[in-house]
Image 1 (tube, rainbow, N blue to C red):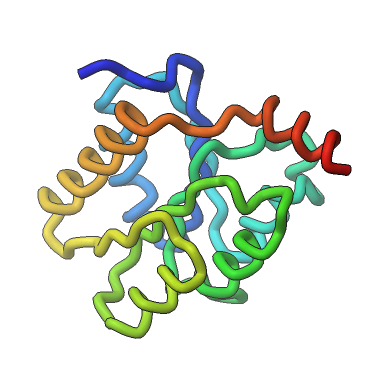
Image 2: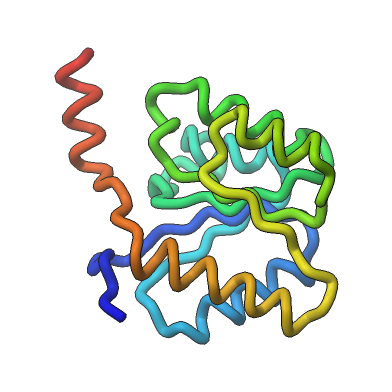
Length: 158
């Protein structure tokens, strides 16, 4: 399998459950890919990261966002809505990774232009398998947008 993204991939994981963060990071690091994983513990922190506010003024623009739906302070649906309405960041792929199997959450996520919806299994081995499948597809096969090009397009469209 060829890795499509030769440069390091910046991943923003928006997740309030420390156990899920640790498992996900372990699974992603097992792949030995060049990637940086940044953690936002809730929706407001995710938006601060994306808009480079507060302690995130030097944050990189993520190449992909892993977004939980059930979080304190601001739900993942609210975060997804804000991301996909903003021309400056709506190009960033958003993968919903949540425990919710509710049809309304799945439908609402896709209506808000989530790039895919993954349900977190309760079983640890199945959870690791989901993360590794995410990695194989999104980090090996998919061509992610280059931020330099997007920045030039924004300046040109002004």
